[in-house]
Structure formats: structure tokens, C-alpha cells
Length: 134
Image (cartoon, rainbow, N blue to C red; front, side, top):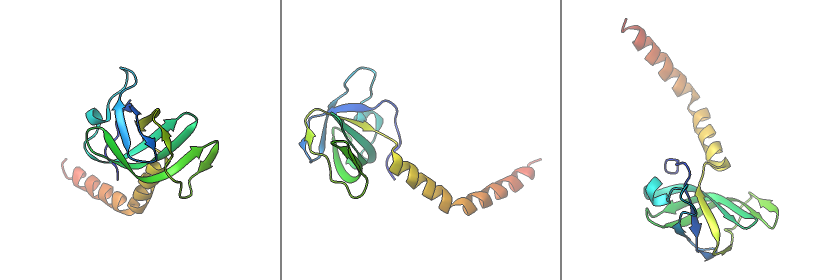
């Protein structure tokens, strides 16, 4: 699972091509830098580069670089691809955001679904113990 979520983190990206994302700082003062919001490690990200988009998981170095490790979906030239998409080739003017994307939501739902019995058992157990406190 990726690092914690953060609000309003978005940075410019100087990367040209399909390599690692080099973050260049916030675009406006109403945004937060990645390094101020996340520790190093896995992070869900999204990229906007003109009309093109990419969402995935990358590894943030804690300062200014994200290695794209799993690309989950792209929108390239108006064509959506969520079946083994390749990283976008960036123009050097992209915007990168930390995000809670569809893949993150699906992973969370899977975890909840696979642990439903354990969750219900813990709730019953906690409830029983709580009633003993009276």
C-alpha cells in the first residue's frame, strides 16, 4: 500500500520522456510540495500533461523524484487505456499530484472485503468487553 494521503499536493515536473518524475516545486502558493507531505516510499500519483493523463504508483525519494513503478491507466490522445498501459512520454511541462485513484480505491475495497469476518469478530469482541466495563 502507498504512503498516507495528503491534501493539495501538486508540483510541476521537468521530465521529458518516459523516465522518472523530476518534481520542480508548487505551481501556486495554495499547493503543498511532495516533500512536505510525504515521507520516502510508495505513493499513488497522477500526471496531467496537456490533454494526456496517467495514474499509477511510484516510489518517492522524499525530496524531488518519483520513480514510476506501476502505471495503472493512461489517457493518451483521447484514448483511455487501463490494460497494461505504458508510461506517458512527458513534455517537460507536466503537473504531478499525489492522489487517491481508482486503483487505490479498489485495493482498499478488496482489503475490507477480505477482512469483513475479522472486522465483525473484533467488533463483537470489543462490544462484549465494553459491556463488562459497566
